[in-house]
Length: 482
Image 1 (tube, one colour):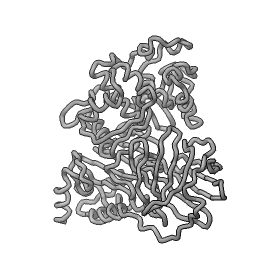
Image 2 (image 1 turned 180 degrees about the vertical axis):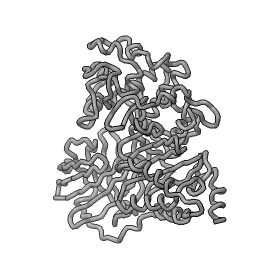
Image 3 (image 1 turned 180 degrees about the horizontal axis):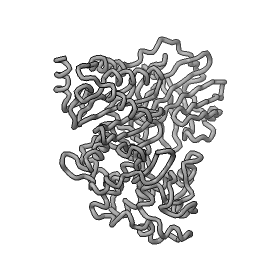
Image 4 (image 1 turned 30 degrees about the vertical axis):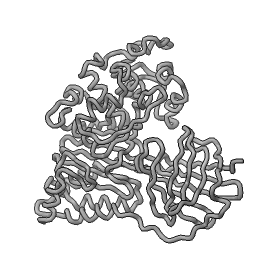
């Protein structure tokens, strides 16, 4: 037992990756939780082949579980997807606190004075309606959020949103529409004369001592208010801790308690699921607040249990992680301690894959040849394979003009490369199955897991992509470039 107490003391400031953290590390038992329940939960995730990247649990201001699943590492900034919307809500609250925005009751048109009004309902649309997903726009999560895709095809994203027809009166009912949060991003930028990311760094991220963050933006320089914000899991947990502490961090009021208290189950969604001020709630358990993003990005705040849970992944259902914690609390028995088993489990899931030996089936005609892709929404325009001194490489030409040169670990062995946008890590592994080359593309800092299949036939390639995150299959033909 003494060595575990020593571990707690040594790791009270830095985690195992040398990353400074603001919480001490504790055994679950010391915080009224059962380690064996947590260990069994991790084992089940691993045995099921779940593409979870990380699971972080904090209780009573102590880290009781910091589990990362190979090949992910906790120091990687991660795309938090629509968890961004919950962060965006806090930024709006801070902008109101600082006087940049007068009130969430401000009309949206106040920030777009030159816009031509095509529907009188637009005149009463407020910031509050946007942050509550109650704009009334004819816009929903149906058909893979087609309005969001249509918006991004336009030169003026805000203009597109403001010209949408209304299906209900603003403020009347909930309808999930990511474009609402793009409007919030543009409003914030217009009100503060700062990009959302710069505003976030100055008034939120720096106050919480964040590590490096990234946030995608459009050609006008407006950050994607609905998603595409990257931060580390520990920094996500700091956001959750703000809710537990009524907007305070280290005794300093970062977001007003008044804004935090507005996060209530205001709009019915489904069953007991509700929404309020950019966060998801349960109308029967209002002490549980969630921020949710596709692919397994999730932040749970369990106020009555003083718990923050953060998950990241590349396509899995994170909805049961709160139950895992609740079960671990219920299973706690004074005098029992299974911390050693939990530590061993956490160590085991971090171990690299050994892969297997396999002969190379690349022929000379497959290498150093560029294959042009048919139009596709993977945004890949062409690919080629090359042989390096140590590894084979898959080179992808991307629609935005970028290029990714990615090592593909043969014999089903992960090799880490970096994507072209922010230089964040991507892990690829591959193996031959007769005449087929199978490549797994795991974007470790993002939410996408793909399984590519290449079948070569002289100057053409049959290409198939299984999009695990979005549960869809894409089949294309690629032809050698002239």
